[in-house]
Length: 69
Image 1 (cartoon, rainbow, N blue to C red):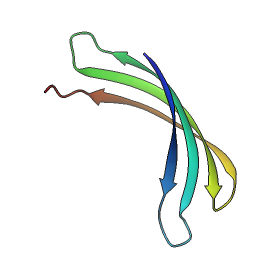
Image 2: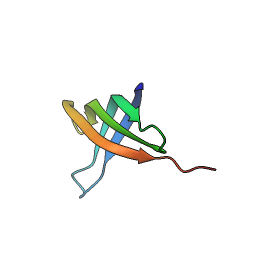
Image 3: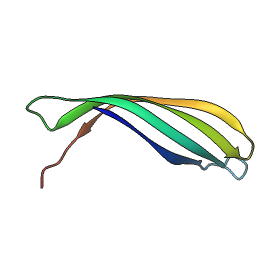
Image 4: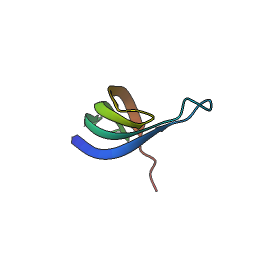
């Protein structure tokens, strides 16, 4: 499965470390057959707009467990 979408990123910390950015994520996930689990890889460019404009790239590898109702 392929997924993508927009979002925001907010970092908080000390009084001078707060940041706000616009983020777009794109990733690929694989469902494990017969199990309520998927594994994924994603990348996300972030354009920070506060306190100044800068471009960074986030990425992630992980797994999700799906609880049944």
